[in-house]
Every structure is written in structure tokens, then in C-alpha cells.
Length: 268
Length: 103
Image 1 (cartoon, each protein chain N blue to C red):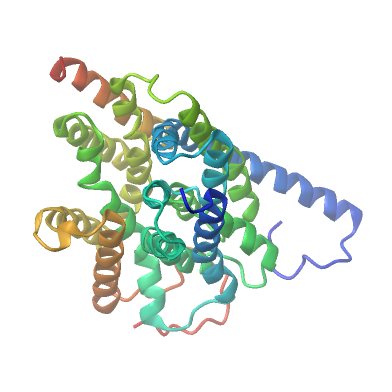
Image 2 (tube, rainbow over the protein chains, first blue to last red):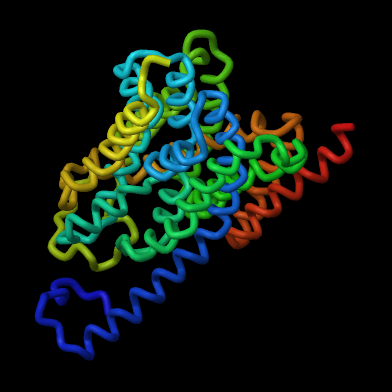
């Protein structure tokens, strides 16, 4: 069903219907996995809405900010700039820094796309590269199927944007105990992504452990601890993944069996 | 307020979307360089791990409940529990722990 080079414009009708069914199934898989993300987003974006209201945004503006950014730290940082009525350049810079990790994630995702995927799929998938959607995309076996991402986005994006809007309108109705409990859902999801590969592959496992340890150190050591958490994430990711790549180069195309015929093994 | 909120939002969104979309549209093929390939293979696991700890202990009302959620989450994921189970177990652990710890 997913052979290369068959997606030409002169598909027969029967093939097209088979393909449509597959897309729909993949889309629904995305919806399924997007559900817990959307729930988590809804709650987190509620608190983000409170920050938006403090910055002077109305519900529509909160909705727009969240729909087009879908980034908690990045949006929060932006709202503080708006609240301070600071120069426009400042919001450009702070957004760039707070969201720079998405650039790393996009680079990593680019390698999961099947070569030849249309530019529109790349743009629309890129539209919503968040920590969580990136996580489930990486966890899915085989080449990236855009319809899976669309399914996840279909719930997660509105969940985030509507949640922000409602947060602007009705700030603090959730009790702190509920906010606290729901705020770890997203971390649970990260663990679900990283732990099974860490169990299977000792190098990934070692890097995950090193990441936990160094991330903790970076949060208490003077100097680096005063950087924003987004900046720390970038520095540590580049450092740890870089050392990992230098010491333990991968030997084969990661888990995409047969999708890269004729690939010479440069890695060693 | 001297600045227009809509212009702020426009700038902010343009930057965020460019960050996400430009690498995906510029890097169209498989990277051949072994170091870069390995680097990008490790990035997801490292970056998600860095973002999880110690942040999970700071997101909750007490660090203990977050730490317990971390332990349970790792345990369940280790034994292959589903996404929904891992995520909801973490929430439940925090809620129950704080029922006891936070008056």
C-alpha cells in the first residue's frame, strides 16, 4: 500500500479509493493518539489564557496567538513582551529563542519524511510541530505519514486554541489540585515515547539517563540555571546528542527497513 | 499601549511558523553525513528526556508527587503500557499523593 513511486497523478479509480481508505485510517489513528494530547493541552492552555488576559489580550486574540503558535513557553514569553508594550523587535527575538528547539525537531522530522513528499505536506505537518506531536510522530514506526499528524492536529490544535480563549474569559475555575495532576500528563507522554527505545537500545538508554542527570545539573548550577528552560533544552540537546553521535554513530537507517535501498553505510 | 496587539501576534506567529516549516521544506532528502544522521537520530530522545526532568517535579504542587509520577511513568512505559495508561497513571499518582501531602 505504501510503495514508493506509485503516487502519480494518473492513479486508477480503484487505487484511489484504496488509498483514500488508508488515509482515513491513518488519520483516525492520529485522532486516537491526539486525544490525550488535546486534553492535556486544553488544561495547560487554560492557564496560558490567564497570562494572555493579564497581557491585555481579548479571547479572539488569545485564540489566534495559540492557533498560530501552539507553544506554551514561546507564547508565554511573547505575552510578557506584549504586557510590557516593548518594541516589536523584542517579540521577534524572544519568540526565536523560546521556540528554537522546534527547529531541531523539524530537522529530525525531515529525515522521517519519505523523499519526494510534496511541499504542502511538509508545510502543513510543520505548522504544528509541538513537543507532544513530535513525540508521537517519532514513536510511530516507518516513514512519516502526514495524515497521522493531521489527525492528531485536528484535536490538539483546537484544544489548545479554545482552551486559551476560555482561559482569557474565565481564568481560575479549575482547582489547583486538578491543574497540578493534569500538568504531568504531557510528561507521561514523553516517558511513553523515550522509555521503550531506551530499554531496547542501550546507547539510547544511556543518553536518556545522561540527559536526566545533566538537565538536573543545569537547573541548579549557577550561570546556566539562569537561562530560560528553552535555551537550556537547546544547549543540552546539541551537547548530548552531539557527543552521542560522535561516540556511537548509528550503523543503519533507523528502523525504516528497506526504505532506503542502495544506501551506503557511511555511519561507521 | 503604543503597540498594536495584532502586529505583535503577526510577528510572533511568523517567527514560530518559520522555525517549524523552513527545516522541513529545505531538507528534502536523506542526509548522507553519518555524524549528522546519528545526531538527528538521537535528538528526539535526548530533547524529550531533558524536557521531562527535572521539569516534572516543578510542575506539581510538591516535588515529591512529580517525582513519584516520573517513577511510575518510567515503570509503566518500560513494561509497554499504552500512551493513555502512562499519561493517566502519572496524573493519578500526582492527584493521590497530593491528597495526602497537600492539606
